Amino acid sequence: MNNKLRSYFPVLNSCAYFNTAYVGPMSIQLFEFRNKLEKEYLNDGDKFKIDNIERIDDFRETISGFINSKKENTFFTSNFSTGFRYILDLFPKKSRILTLKDDYNSLLSGINEREFIVDDLSITFDFEIQIENQLAKKTYDILAISVVQFLSGIKVDFGLLKKIKEKYPKLIIIGDSTQFIGSDLFSFKDSPFDVIIGSGYKWMLAGFGNAYMAVSDNFIKQTRSTSQIIYEKVYAGHINFLGSASLNFSIKFLQQNNFHELIKIKKILGNFLIEGLKDLNLINPIIKSRKNHSNIYTIIGDDNLYNKLQSHGIRCSLRGEGVRLSVHFYNSESEIDYLLKVLKKSN
Image (cartoon, rainbow, N blue to C red; front, side):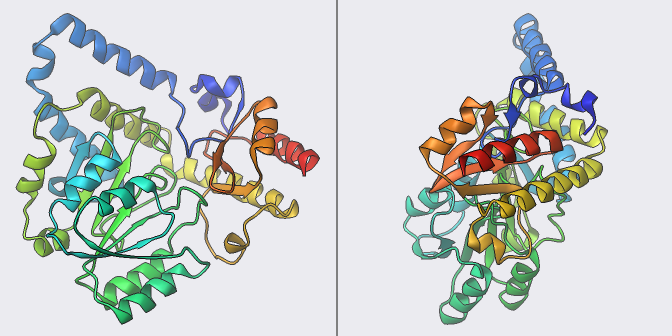
């Protein structure tokens, strides 16, 4: 990893940071950009807000280019939870929804807050096949899942999901992409999803208060909506300009630093870590059975292991029944070696 790029993230100087899945670190550049914006507001007052809508329109161009979605079908919001609920509001009561047990709690609660008919499936090593089997038994309007599971890091198989979409074209597939976009390359137009929504403060390194959402033409047709209806719903009230500007800035930061190359580096680091974890027999058997995985790994462990890692300057999270580790492009092989040595001594 380029030491110059690592130097942009001061927190990396004080720890081994394996906690991007919880919160992405802030770069010096983003910090300075946000400070500059706040000073503009401080000094300009009302003038700072006058052209916000026009500037937001430019930001939509940035995010739509990054994820390959239609600009007019791409929107900013403050977080995943808010954006997801905007989308759910477009479906009638008694809509039939299929979800996964133990998926992101805000995804599940957003659904359960409404008068929908809901079924859920367990996350097994072949959960995509189980989804297809369930769809053959019952008719559903919506499949709502995380692209990457926040507890385990299990990533949905896009190929299998595309087959499901081809078989059930009227099924609206909604994805929480918070733990995915920014960690890998993605084209919304070429994906099986009708809707993606994700917060920017994790893998996109955009700080707090921002999220994006994109919808397909099929979604608009099926919900009898329009881009304008969604626009007016999302942008009612004042806009978190600092948050959306930060996401716009961070996307350009990733692009300027050769995002494609950064993802290659991240995947090499992820493979290095998972092989080490396999050697220590710390990987969930479900993950071993799957072809592709994200760069989030929840290993066998409890409070004692978590506290041990913290005491050795290793940032991570307690999640579910284990300790969650996550790797991004700014990690290094030497950090991973250090982590594995601490884990080996604790094993």
